[in-house]
Image 1 (tube, rainbow, N blue to C red):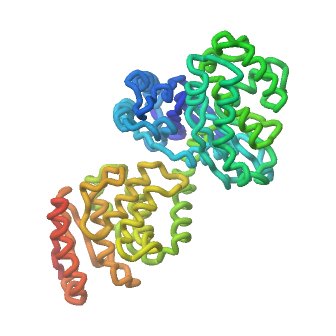
Image 2 (image 1 turned 90 degrees about the horizontal axis):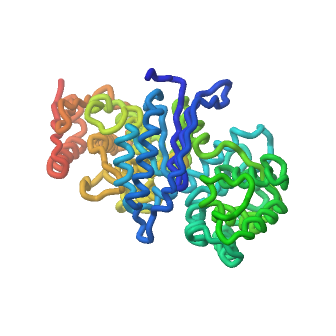
Image 3 (image 1 turned 90 degrees about the vertical axis):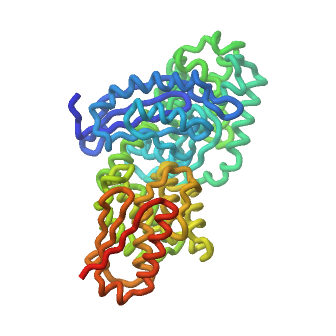
Length: 497
């Protein structure tokens, strides 16, 4: 199949369903090329010990085998696959992801709840008219619910551990329905929402609901002539509650417009939305057809056209922790200058490797805001655990590994959750040595680096520079010993005329 260089693909591996969207842009608006959805019920396979069952994994893999065929016409760098709540929580997620990535031929990015919320808002915002209304966006997924408030961009983001699959399994097992069970589910959801109500007050003028639960409820209320199309009201919710609880089991519930593929998880999702109506005290919402996957496409297009949210996040961290940006830029420039010499030996695309290396250089002194002793460890901890808009957990882990290992002895056995690319780390370590005195000069004209093979780095340094910088020369000799002992990488220093 010929590749369409103008197409983008977003694959959302949700807790309830897998959604594929392939689209292009026309006048800055999405033009849908293909959609595909499978109700995988991944969250239903998560046991009490946090392990994803073999059956659930197989359902997911069967779905992805079909989806992989549809991705073949999209350039690899224009595909983004994200995993949400269930893959965040599953203790054996890596086992499933390894099989899934082999099928898809592209990496899966696990994103945090707040990053999921940001992408939801980005998608919904591009579905609505451009105006000055502050909005509360509610996205009820299979395992989590995202609340986002903002104007033209999100300002408040929360991800709560309640979803249509998890709540249906917990409070309505095997589809059983009762007033008592419904009240328990609603109270549980209200308890999760309550701590966040005050911070959201005054930050929205209208409420928008996205994803399957909201659209399903809206469709049913329209079929029953209880609400206008695309709307959900408090009165409509009350009427639908009575219709739902008139049956003893969801399988027997005679609700016009309730689809078979939504029926098993409807009660849990309905209870979550009902609780939000009560706790957040809104009286109506309207639904959007856009959600996480549309947000992913807009975000991906931004990355490829110089509107990368991650760049803004790096700038904000630099400002927040008062990093010496001039020093970070000096180190970054030298690293990026050397990168082509190891390009054939790195474990990721050149473009992403360049960005990660540059960002790590810009943030390598992040931990100094906490303490000078062990500041590389403090910086790595922040990068592993902070909410970093635009970044996946894997990207944060790789960034953390670079910062953790930029000084002192590298720690091959100490993982930040990533598989460190040690040659990238070597470049960062060497650049930090050369700019240890924080001198405001460009060194890339004088210092050349080559790498004949992945286990050998050669530095070509003018003899006069070595004579004029004896402490740096000594540091480089020490570094050669460290790299050989810890990483089995030879650093060869050659004096030039």
